Image 1 (cartoon, helix red, strand yellow):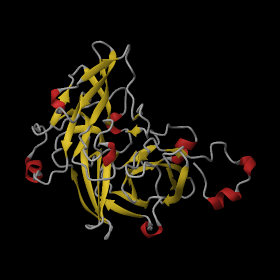
Image 2 (cartoon, helix red, strand yellow):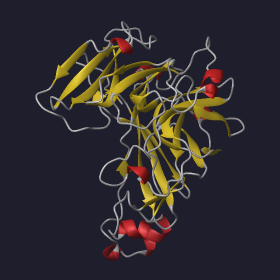
Image 3 (spheres, helix red, strand yellow):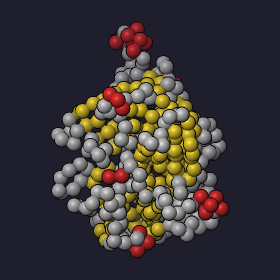
Length: 378
C-alpha cells in the first residue's frame, strides 16, 4: 500500500508507518509464445485515492533482462485482480466487484480476505492495456469495458482479431450470486459444497472499436462442466486455440471437489453448440466431454500442459498434461501423465508416478526442460 505522490510528500518520513511502501507481484506471469518474453505486473494500493497502481514489465528470455515497463492507475479499484491474459498487443485485467475495508485491514483487526466485501450482482469491468514492448503505432490509451455481473478467477488464453476489431478471452469463474463477502460459501471450517456455486469456463468477446462487450457466456461445449485452472498449449496463450484443459469435478453442473481432468473443445467451426448449450439443464450430464475421473477418493490438482520436445508448435495436441493427484487411500501423491496427442483423456494416463508421501495441495507451477529454453508456466 502507498499514498499518492502529493500526500506522501506532505507526511514527514519519521511518522510514516512502516507498512507503507513497496509493491506486490502477481502469481500469474505469462510467457509470450511469439517473443519468449516473460510478462508480469506488480501493484500497489493507493490509500487516499482508492486507486490501484499497476506496473507491467516484460523480461527477455536471454539472461532475464528487463526490456520495457509501463505504469498505469486503475481508479476506484480496491483489490488487484488475480490473473491476466495477453494478446499480441494487449494485456487484459478483469476487475471483480470487490471492495476493501482498509481501516480494518491496515489496523490488523481483520485479515485481508475478511476485509473484502463482495457484490455478486454488480457489474464488473475488463481493462485493456497496451503491452510495454508495443511499437509506437501499436500504443494506445488504456480503456475498460463494462460487463454483466460475474466473478472471474483464472484465464486460459486470449487473442485479438484486428479485422473484426475483437478480443476473445476464456476464463474460469461463476455466474451472478448473492454473496456479500469474498469467501462467501467458502468460509468456515471446510467448504460446504451444497451452497457453493459451480465454477465454469466462460468465453468473453469485446469490441475494441466500440469498446463494448459483444458476448459473455459459458464457453462452447462446456455447459455443466464444473472445472477450474483452465489452460491451453503454451504456444496458444495469445492465439485462437481449439482445446482448453482443466481440472474438473463433474459434468452435471454440480459443485464438488476436483477428481479428474477434462478437455473442452471451445472453438470448432464445424459444430454449432449454441442450441445444445441452451437446451441443457443444470443437473443434466454433458455427454460430449472428453474426461478422465480418478475416483471419489482422489483429489486432483492444477494441471500443466507441457509441449513435447521437438514437436510442431502449431499442433496444440502435441503435448502432455501433468497433474498432481492425491490418493487418499494410500495417503500418497502421484504425478499423472496424459499424452494429449496419442490418446483421449478418457483413455487414462500413460503413467502414474507415486511419490514417497502425500504432497499438500498447491496452486500454480512451471515445468522446466532439460533441453533448455523458457519454463512452461501455469
